[in-house]
Image (cartoon, rainbow, N blue to C red; front, top):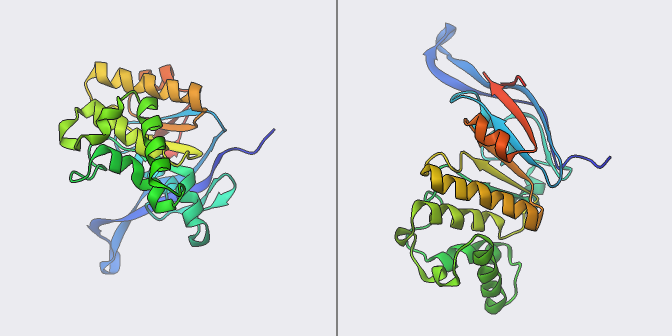
Length: 233
């Protein structure tokens, strides 16, 4: 059997609360408590839990956005400074707010092209534009959208662009944290179907984080449930 794409081993996370303990030190609250998780290549893995269960914190640990104790390996690479650039190319992220990660003063084509420029994956402007056009088709938008500003897009269209930005580097794993909770039910269903199409067409691997267990059961190959910082199911 091949090694898992993502391996989370004994991951814990704490933060200093507002309450003061003995000797004037702030009390520490444990958000994650020795979490273990594996995701395989080509798998859509669902992570469910109520608000405050720790699921979003775990996603941010996997992305390397916050500090943690334990090990997180993506394609066998640990989260170290030496591996930071390579890991950045292997991980993509889609968040709850569809427009939060879109620079409002840049057009859609520029936004989709940006990851290619940063990582210098395409030598010419024409090559980058071709990949942008291909990505727009993948996410279900006409190529004319590359000339639009984020403010001209609906919430669903913004989330499609966010998904496109996350996919531009062809990462090994996408972390999608509540990607449809801010959308209307019908638009959210379209985004869920887009993820299914991307799995079929590209073989993407996805960690789908949501409080909606019914949605997770519909979309995902396997499911874990978090409660009070632990995997309980």
